Image (cartoon, rainbow, N blue to C red; front, side):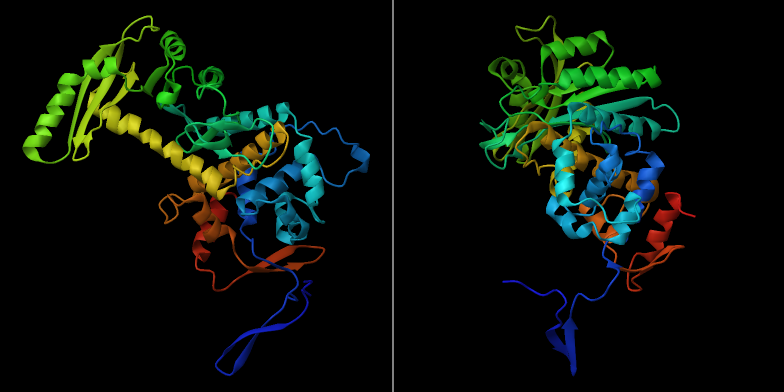
Length: 435
């Protein structure tokens, strides 16, 4: 059925009045907050610093490669995951203004060609931009930084290149690797799922630590990961290069035998007191492939469901309970940020047939995430949105209705008078550089 978008229809009634709807409102936007993304982008220089090898004939194009990149990233931040959305979104004056254009933006087919023309160098440049923005976010060198590495599943959309069944996740998927420091995204690396979960982590760790110590020679770097990344060669390298590590290690019969006294003690205390017991201790351990013994922190937990021991290997000093509860368990925040990438910013929309375009889509979501985190970091401290999800920030400060008035001298947005966060919008704008 073909619908006429200029037709007026009656939706309901309110008292004696008819409630009618049509699409004849003219220049109206529902994304006035897109201009905040432009301010955040300008503040960090995020998209500007990404070099793009544009092999198109420059005399025959209407949209520069940087504009295509910004158009795609801003749209993801605003909640538009599909290229088809740009069929109409390209006509939105506010999106055009945010991108830096005074005419219609690129069509969905142009954006599709842009993604499929991407090469590995562009992906490298985007990851490099993440790191440089992170470095520039510090006014003075930090004393310590913690690098969280984590992998996740990314379900495939069909018979795609790199499609494999994963036994743990029990479906066909990719296995992307993310690296965070606090809330900063430092790397996003798409991988097939038929590999070692730690594949590529060592190379990324070496590259990151080299760059960070180039600008901060005295910074203490800590590598924090779960048991999927427990590899003795990586730990050897960390020991040689003064990199701290705190890594989960899978249980085995030998480790549990060494920890048996503490595990038994937790069981006995539970039987006496009738409530959950958590005891912590240290021991020395070396697997057959390890060159030397390392420190293992033991968490001997016993509940009504039975025993639940956990182990971590570390070269860090300090109290075992503090290391486990305060330092190691904090890595769970990285999992929340990966969820933000996938659920709020569509990093799992890897539906292209070829590999590099899918890697690019993952990175475009990372760029959108970085802009939103820039807004959070610079302008949302001590507000209700300081700890809000990316989706909530989008809803509260990006999705704003506005009438657009445009002439040869200026573009003016008349935002909704009923918008409940007017003071916050002004505050954010000023802190990001508005005048």
